[in-house]
Image 1 (cartoon, rainbow, N blue to C red):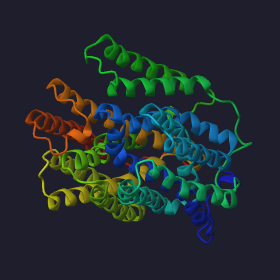
Image 2 (cartoon, rainbow, N blue to C red; image 1 turned 90 degrees about the vertical axis):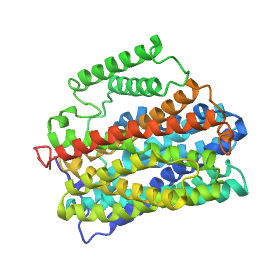
Image 3 (cartoon, helix red, strand yellow; image 1 turned 30 degrees about the vertical axis):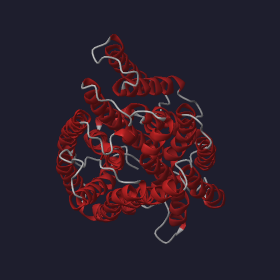
Length: 489
């Protein structure tokens, strides 16, 4: 049921744009941090003298925590109020950044990243709901396109900022950089946000928290990600790996059983009865699984295998984010007028082609090939993301945007972290099987053909496997149609 407190802004009310830029600062900082860390992985590995498998936990730990607690935190935001929850999340993020800056070991750095991930999870659980909830329904695609553009700006700024900073100072300084927009976001949120106008439902819902659902969700997601990433290098047919998959399936089944019976679930699973919701969610998960690993692998490939420094790597990675920012603006706006299907299918189709092309990259692949591929890959990601979210939201009412904010970010994060973990497992597994597991800084300029061939074999296999998931995403996108239900307000 719609109420005055969650009514969207009227077209003549500029408050929705003030809200967008206020919470957009926080979203920018979170994405900036994510892209900066990817570019800093090689430097972190060098300082702590660790391998690819070890250093990737700096990134995977963030995604692991975010994926595990995102959905439970979405419900907490509804109970406590979106403004308070948003500001608290940014405060956690700042504290985590300070801890990361002072970390003296890989273990300390990972722990600091966990604190930052808690803050990022709190922010992501409400940012989407706050922005979309304040825009009129007729401008939903524009709002989603702007969100994606903000993500692209953060992704683009990361490589440009990180490269010079890492070279001039050290990798620790990048965490101080993420604090600047975050602190500005805290000040702006304190002044601008008004719970009555950003869709908070405090006092309108029962403050009963689904603790069992939160435990089942966090346990299932944590276990499946740990099993796939295999950080302890268990044999893939070992009791630990097989048991991890079996227990994960059991926990997911238990979660579904419980959520269908509890009065106040974290997520209303009956949304999946709507075919548009089910297929668009499947598309989102599979496309992020198949496409996001590129943002994780390419900085490592460019620096540790092709031999470019951080500054050059930052400029190379910038073109992908630029492509995503440009296309997301157009696809978001045009999807309001022409619908989501054409943009979603075209974007994912192009993504499939780019995955195949990247599988053939080698150390001496010229930049005039690498950079256009990265740009078009970014265009493809920006082309499908906003229209896909618009398709999902077309099946739910404005009162459900809070839970959908957490859910859609959860789907993105789970798809991304599984894609990253799968990519790491394949490359590390191939190299280990050939006796070629080395530190990242030893890859650049190596003359050992065993190491080179093992890495390239793992790289090629990774992108072919990920391309298979993109094919499934393309199938799901093609199956997505608009069928609105009584969930709409």
